[in-house]
Length: 608
Image (cartoon, rainbow, N blue to C red; front, top):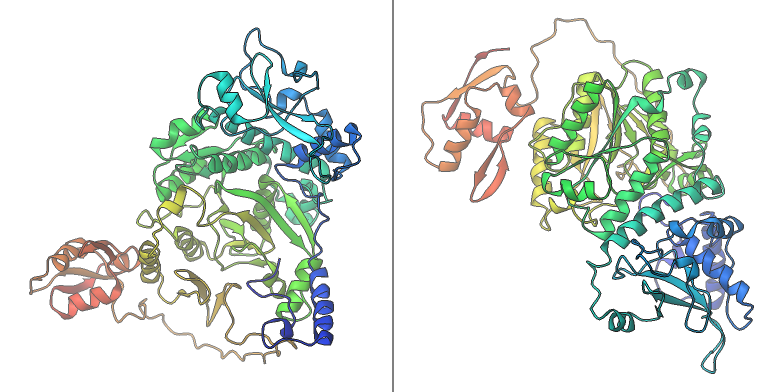
């Protein structure tokens, strides 16, 4: 949980010449001190997909009485939950029971050894087959250490096998991933539900915290603004992820967390994938492409008079850090404050209610859009404010009020959330970003979705960045640490508010940042406001029309057709695109100036 890429490693461990034994001893001591800051939970206490299976194996090894094998203790909670879970709710239970076959509660090996229904399932195992585990006894080949358990594949008639090859010989056919697809879908669904149930029981000891733990951080006025659970229309925007096992696991991880709060989300998907999503038992509708799906979900929420919650399909957890700011704005101090803060793992509906309560009880101008911090670690925010009003709102999870009229720009395939944020600030004066709330979410590597829109050369990223810079001049700058990424620095009065993931030009040194002298603000004389002009040298209200000269280049002639008859303001805020040498380009301010200078276009009188 370190901020950015900063590592708590002593300077003399960062390379250099070999160290003497005394120096190495000091290095080990310093490194151990640095590790203590992280306050990791003990191994085995974290809840994950394999927790219940590990507890099952641990219990079976203990019951077997063998002393020649290692037995890793499971927590009391995991052991109890593993024993109490019905065999019908374990993934090893057959997807379809064969009439006249042996019931899994009666599974035994040829030697009469009990076979217990497993929590896992092989990817190729057919629906009618099951998977179990059994205890083993020491043999002449036993070396001590591991072992003690064997995985069994059980046919409908109760015959058991230890290998895929022998199972196929008995069945008389080869088993494929297609044969095991339904079992893997069931495995993903069960693991998501069971993991969430176990995390809920574990609570603040490393599991899921109750909603009230988060709401206690609100003031009495903010608590009065808490909306009920049924005030939300939850929309999950997804595409082409329901036919991959990784995608199915992510889908059920998100779905189960909303259902845990009693809320059924609506999945906005591409038309070709609609049947696949509905086959998983999801409430799914056609959303179209990314921005089209986002806008449809906003319309549907507005029609119902509900708050729109938009969520990505690959979020595994929502986290909030509660604690005081760092004493100084240095990396070490902010890391220490972050790690010392109380960590809450909350459900997404609780997170949405918390953000809306903050939005509805804050000072004017009241925001209509709220969200979470954009990085996986919020350590850097422990040197600033807990809530930001003019900062980027991440598209992976946000809330929008039903009376908001702002829409996503359909011309954008990526970076659409940056534009959405700017439009909200420009329209309503502010947003509400919870800087201490973060997501555990995949980026760039997951299958389907926006990942299929990105290209290795980054051309699509750069195209969308060009749109942002044309629509919002001076508000974006290149991110020095991330290729093809930008930083929103919204200009509020004479100052710009930049996001904390950027390296400051006056970065705090180890001893802390020097206090800056207060800026004297001159009193402004009251004058009649001048006509609004951006620093473009062009009047925003001027009409664009054809000039006396004709363009010879086909691509210039094509782009002239798109801008003639429009207002300069419309071209700047919603620039059209055109094609040159097979590449899609955005019509920028410099293109407009060029076309006017060449005589291809003229600017007429102000129309508004």
